[in-house]
Image (cartoon, rainbow, N blue to C red):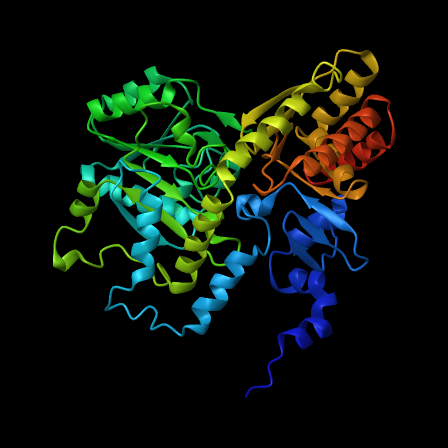
Length: 459
């Protein structure tokens, strides 16, 4: 019996949370949170809500960047994790074939019947790394194409196919990969004609800006790739598992059958990190071509029992609760309610997305007073107006959202897939109040001036 007591430790030291981060972790995180007033203290969470010490609820429209697909602390997932711990399995022996990975692979592949095998890792970026390695080895070619503005992860291989310079700067040299504009089939074909392309990795809906591939693009890209003996890699780390109203987002386009599919985030149930790369049989058989190559690609914690149990529980809940259909219905309700506001507010440019992955884009207004304020913000730093909306949503309405990327005037909504009409009503009412304030020249612009000063000071 040890003297460790987690409850006692949190009670004694929990109030030091921001100081501990400042001293020992990323010191810019608490600084940023203090600056924008996001330095809240959440005591507990359940479903789509956080709760503070006073019992006030906060609506989560961020889902931990998409990890909390079923919300926080789903009872079925919790029970599965208790069960797997209580079972005291002989886990990660490395020299046996436990049943849970095979069972989870079987369940995942049922949603992608054209694929045959799965590799389990620990995160989304690791799932992408696996796909990059497998594509290069299976084709014997070095180069992978990706879309501008893409986000596929931050480890070195995944960073090589990240389309955002802000993430890449200072980390060169990276892999010899090449960006093409999303939707530009001519550019894709030009690169393929060089004969050194292993594959093309693409998010069916980009998280940065919430931009969907144009209709027909994935199918046409797939045909081009296969004609040039290259692979289509679908990054479904954020869009997969029902987020867009189909199990995988590529399934919105008929005839699209990627050679490799990357998933993670929501598969974890919000508890145990997990990533998975689904692929065709011939690709796996090339990579693992002999017994000598049995461990040529592996992960120390890959396919651990806790992660597999969480994944199996998540898929069972999604089936039992018809989560995909629910996300499709609720997402359409939320998107249509927000889209109806575009004509009402001149600062509101567009509402787009699929399922419960929605982008709200702001743009330059027409009236002189608003235009001058907008110009002031843009001169200091693009993206400040979207941040001006995010902050009062939290501070005044207790709703957590995010700006969808650096220098973008877009808010991204990726709430837990379990939200319903009550949460839709709450968000739309709060968003309407914030937009009313913005158009009436209210307190929102006072905060905008604070953000401008901060942006100028950081240059």
